[in-house]
Image (cartoon, rainbow, N blue to C red; front, side):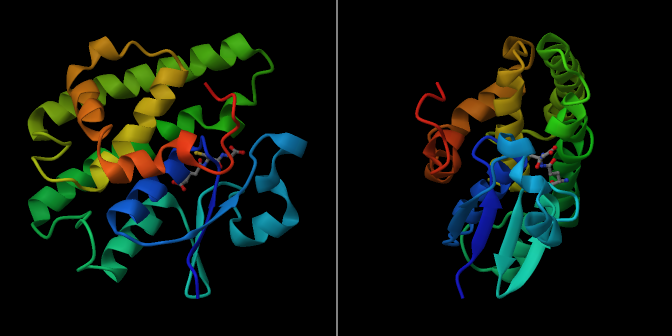
Length: 215
Ligand SMILES: N[C@@H](CCC(=O)N[C@@H](CS)C(=O)NCC(=O)O)C(=O)O
C-alpha cells in the first residue's frame, strides 16, 4: 500500500514532513492540496474528513491517516528506526534538545503566522507586518537557544528533526522579509543544509504543484 502525502508546495509544515520522508528514505505519492484557490481545498468536506484542522500535511500510511507534522515526523522515526537518518537521537538529553527546537518553531512561531491567521487581515501590507514581527521575534529566541546546542546542525553535528523544522521556517522568514543577517547561527545551518540531497528534494520549487513562475 503506497504512502501518500497531502501537501502544498509552499506550506512549511508539509515541507518539514517532505524533508523527514527524504531523510528516512520513504517513497511516497504526492497529493497536492491548494490552500488558496476556490477558498482553499483544505476546507472541503472531503479533506476535512482526513484532517479536522483543515490544514496540510496529512500522511496516509498502511491505510491509516496521521496528521500534525510533529506527530508524523515522530511516527516515521519510530516506524523506521533502522532506516535513513535517526531524527530523534536515543540519548534523552539530546532528544529533548531536538524536541525543544522543533516546538519553538511548531508551537511558538509557525501557528502565529499561518495562513488562516493572516487571512484575518484584508490588507496585504498588514499581513506582511504581522508575519515579519512574529517570525523575527521567534528567531531572536531560536538564535539564543541554538547558541547553546548548535554544531554543524541545530543540535550538534548530526542531522535531526530539528533541522527538518528549521529550514522551512527560514523559507517563511525570507517570504516575510526577515533580515537573516541578525541570525547568523540560523543562517549558517540553513546554508549548510541547502546542498543536502534530502533537503534539495523536499524544497518547494521541486514539488509537482509549484507554479512555474514561483520565482
Ligand atoms: N500543527 C500543524 C499545523 C499545520 C498548518 O498550519 N498547516 C498550514 C500550512 S503550513 C495550513 O494548512 N494552513 C491552511 C490554513 O491556514 O487555512 C502541523 O504541524 O501539521
